[in-house]
Image 1 (cartoon, rainbow over the protein chains, first blue to last red):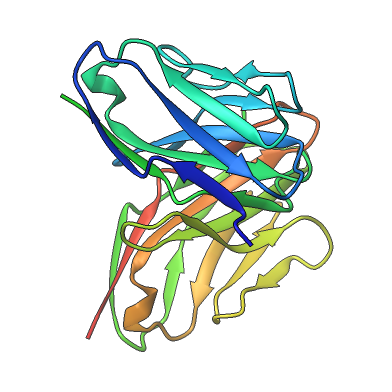
Image 2 (image 1 turned 90 degrees about the vertical axis):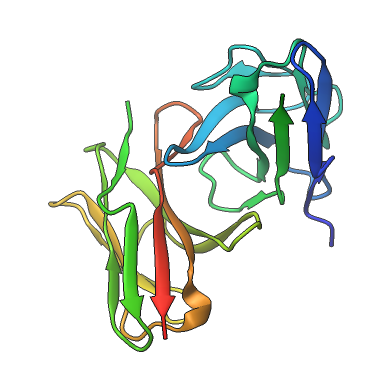
Length: 113
Length: 114
């Protein structure tokens, strides 16, 4: 029962480097989300997807891109990392749009130096 | 746009004391409401949720929250806390008929002292 799995769990990047965070879910959920968590800010939505092949911008999309080529995977990309993107990133998936049955991954702690 | 306000950023209490973590939401239309808990260096776990029906919802570990439409509140309560309840708690709201977003409050750090 894997649920939502995020890889990697930790990463340190230099400013300007690129990377991709992978979120995988095995529950056949349609809806997937990427959030970032910063101290005192709660969780803020970066991008989301309502189904395979679809993506949409959330609250703080600048500097990130996403892709949902397969239903079970939702990738978050940073093309040119900046120190302001130092954060903990959480992926979530949901059976429906109302988050009534939603699950979060364990998070990816990213530091950009 | 939907917003969620958690009125206290930190709440220190002694073990076995009662606690209330306050949450207010902005939308006047139908909402789903959630409380999530985050233990140190872990992900988010759903604590309880209100979708419809009874306004009082309970978790398996003794927490409860009451949906109050007139006061647009969803406060989290526990009559007697344990050291193991030390964690950060997030209130979240999903507005039906709106965008696809689950909006979070900024979190309340609950510290239970012996």
